[in-house]
Each structure stands twice: as C-alpha cells, then as structure tokens.
Amino acid sequence: MATIRNDKPVTAEARRFKEFRKAENLTQKQLGDKLGKEQATIQRYEKGTFVIPIEVVKMLHELYQMSLDWFFLGKGSRLYVPQKGNLITDLKTLETNQSILTTQVYGIKQEFLKLHKEVHELKYQLASKAH
Image (cartoon, rainbow, N blue to C red; front, side):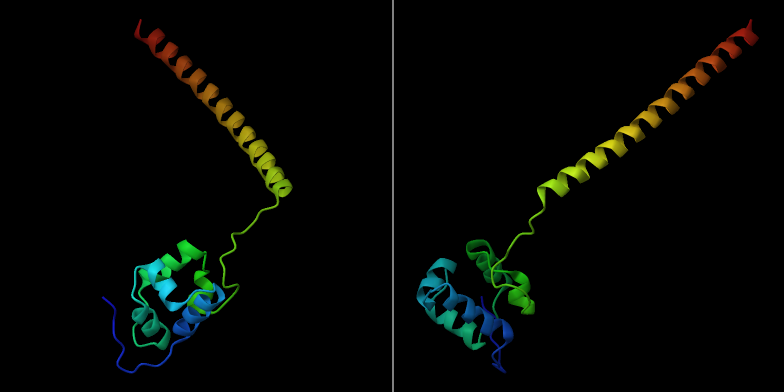
C-alpha cells in the first residue's frame, strides 16, 4: 500500500522517477505494467502524491539498472555502471599477494617445525627423567 503525502510537494525523487521513465521511453502505463502497478499509481509517484516505496526503487534498479546514487542523491549517471578493474593491475596485485602469502606460509611452517622439534625434545627429556 502506498503512503499518501498530505503536503504533496514534488520531491527530487519524484522528479527523477519521471525523468528515468521518460529516458527509458516508457509511458506511465508501460512502466506500471513492468512494476505491477496501475498507471494512476505511477502518475501519483511522479506528482509526489504517493511516496515511492523502496521496493519500487529496487525493481527499477534490477529491471533497468537504475543507479541508486543517482535516484536518491542526484549524483552520477542515471544508469548503474559497475566499477571495472584493470586486468593487468589486478594480476600484478594477485601475484604480489601470492608472493606475500607464500612467504608467510613458509615462515609459519618453519615455526611449526621448530615447535614440533622442541615438543619431541621435551618429551624425550621427560621420558629420560622418569626412568
């Protein structure tokens, strides 16, 4: 159920909602059909009469890759663009991390072997004292 606003100012989100619909070349009816809403409900979202539910915003993001930063904050592109990494930089980072981890594993292995040796020496000393 939609929340009805009594003061009915057109919010920035309502303006961006309408802007997004128009940029996607959709009528209110077409968008309503996609979102499972009546055309009148879409009209009320755009006029600010109804508060746009978060579920509707989430559906716009999932169906049309609408940017949430753009919708809520008015920042960036209207469409969500995932961050792209640089493959060469990513590979170099992975190689460096692997080298660091290999060194750490080797150091841990050396510590383990040292402790293992000390435990056996202690065990031998205790066995010798017992006899």
